[in-house]
Image (tube, rainbow, N blue to C red; front, side, top):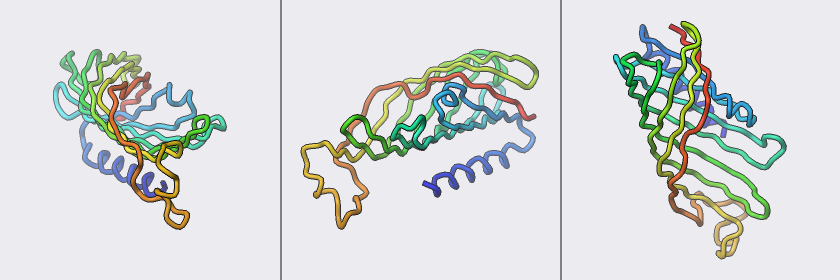
Length: 187
């Protein structure tokens, strides 16, 4: 998982370099923070009514639960107000995640990816601070390894190491983004 963290850091550095003289904001989702899931986002103004953002989040055993995941969410937003990072917006976003969790007697490990629409509103608290609320819904495909399936466990193990594919695949229509974020506009 350390490679994943390096990739995320490189993506953030590239976005910051592209920003140049553009307006850029750094944000964190307070709902994820409350769930012991560190997260960080960047949003870059790309036009008079558009922004491009990327968020990354992840956790390892929050509150002692056997849950680990890392996710990246890029998003393109259109602002109806005529001014980016102010008032109502609609966004088209994606999500890519790697997860491992144990729930009761079942163990899951896999990957998920999807796309969805996000709707939200941003409140300007001051010249540099914003608070935004948002909700996104979309389709998410997943492929994971499930220990409690009908397929014998030995089928998916070779000398004690699991193979790279899962025994369960599918997709779900589900919320892709829900939160309340606090952002600071750098310039």
